[in-house]
Image (cartoon, rainbow, N blue to C red; front, side):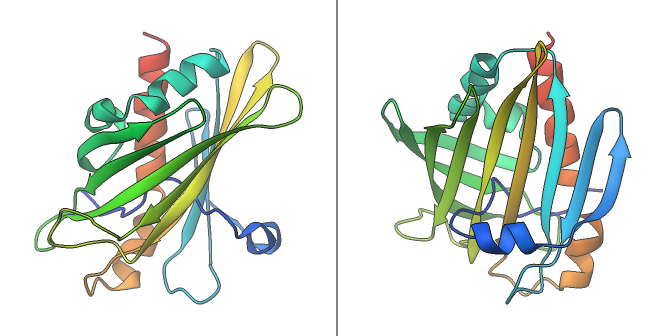
Amino acid sequence: MKTFLLIFLAIIGIGKLHAQQSWKSALDDDGIKVFVGEVSNSEYYAFKAIMSVKTTEAEVLKNLKDVNKYPEWFAFTASARLMSKSDTEQSFFMETDYPWPFSNECMNYQMNFEKLQGASVKVSITGTPNNVQCPLTLKKASGYILLEPEQGSTRITYYFHSEPSQNIPPWLINPRIHEMPYQTFKALRKRLNA
């Protein structure tokens, strides 16, 4: 059953909280590990997913930048479209698919690409409810994807936290929050290994 993981990429500007966060293992299967943790001032869990893929950082970035194809592989994505882009950032709209009886929720996102020391890249994504062309907008949605070289592979870490605007009980979302990154990673790996 579809869960409504109102989630998309991870939290920016909460480095302190992230460092102090206590993670619990939610899933370890098929080379994908997903952890969940509480977030200060929120009833909804954040997740952190990790996997390694035998591909280059450039190939992963190519898929992350191709926003219009997100509905093909990014779990629980009803629609997505690129709004603007440059070499270091891009803006896009994304609609998250929620199961009945809830309605889909949307958000506009800013994605920034930052080269770190070595060959690592951090892709920060920040959601904003401003000027969203959608009946329902997520309350919060932000995070990051970290790409690190690892002996012929790329290690991908995906951190995310979001909150719905609808009155969806946390006890309904939190126990299944791990499904979104797990399904997303499986689909991404299949694309990268095709």
